[in-house]
Length: 141
Image (cartoon, rainbow, N blue to C red):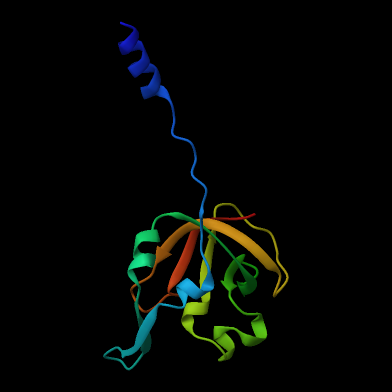
């Protein structure tokens, strides 16, 4: 009987929350890509993710970077390895240096190039149309 009670007690315990994995830009930089053109001539980038990133997909991660506004009125932001003047959109870096943020709750406003740490669930975008990386359920630390 005591053994059964112990098993029932252990079965009701919730697992301890795990700390998010620390994600660094150098790891994201291992992603390679090739230019691909659709039938209508539209350019897209087809990412090739390293195995270590494949294993992190769907996991909670933490990363720091610079906020880049995509659409301030819609509160859409990207996180960049570089400041805005050196980001992917300005031609001084590649698509592996920026990620889309999909916030868990409305984030408010951020200044361009505000340096923040963000946690969220890592999603790898293989379609060649979106940014290579997305953090869903993102929250500012």
